[in-house]
Every structure is written in structure tokens, then in C-alpha cells.
Image (cartoon, rainbow, N blue to C red):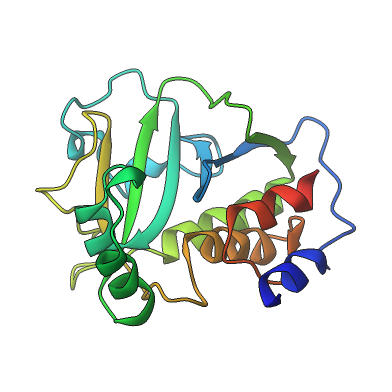
Length: 201
């Protein structure tokens, strides 16, 4: 009931897309929401923070990065949702373990049925990239920390991230918070991807 109520309460409901704005994408699966942004433009060059060589292939034609946040051990144990077990779900939701960012390097923007394309202002984009950058757990030298032994494909990489996943802060809560902080349309609170999709329907 709380999840339904939170999804129905709009935040930044006056958001309107910006003509000729920066294109970003919300990519949703049945249970998870990623935020997709350009690899580089005049506002942000992500190669100043990360290296495409953190992936197994180097992805020479990459133009976009997909950002997802979640529980590190969950990512390790559940490469596919069909692998989900009650033990892993319980540990992720109720026991503290480190978070991770999952980045996928894409040559083209996503185009699935549950992908939402948005054109945002320069100010909104800067706020969004600041939120994404602040989600990394940096080392003492201010550098990101790739997780060397974890990959789903040859075109992705995992990084240590701030925070802990819980029943009240899921991967979708993180994505929804990114939208709220950036001045983009969002809902008050949601643990589910459907809450974000409902907001943009």
C-alpha cells in the first residue's frame, strides 16, 4: 500500500521536456530501472571518471552509458532474475552489504518497449550527472573503484558505490531519487520500476 501511495504522489510535476535538450533514457526491465546518458558531450565527459578498458572488450564504439545501482552481493549471485533465491533476496533487503554501480557501455541508445526518452535542460543534466557521479565510492586518491572480477557481458563494468540496498531503498528508489534531485518528473517514493513507468505514462 505504501508503494502504491508513493507512486501516485507526483514530484516535479511541472517538468516539461526541453526542445533541443540533452537526450537521456530510462531503461526498465520487469524489476529494475537504469539511467542512460551520453558517454560524453560538452557538459560531461565520463571518460574523465571511468575507462572503457574497465570492460572486457573496451567497447570502442560506445556512445552511451547505462547506470544501475544495487547490492554488490546480489549482483554477484544473480546475473539473471531466474537465479533469484529467497536467501539472496532476504540478505539484500534486510542485511547490510556494500552497494555497487553497474555500468553498460552502449553503441546506440536503448529501444525496448519500456524505454523512456527524455530531453532535459542543461541545468537538469548537470544535476543528474552530479547525482550519478556522487553515487560512486571513491578511493583515497579520488578515483573510482572498478570491481575487477565481476562482469555480465564483455561490454559492462561494476564499481563500488555509496550506500546500502534495503527494503526502503532499492535500485528503483535510487533511480527515482536521481530524477527528483535533477528536477525531472518523479514520484514521491517507489521500490518498484512500475512506479517510475507510471509517472511517465
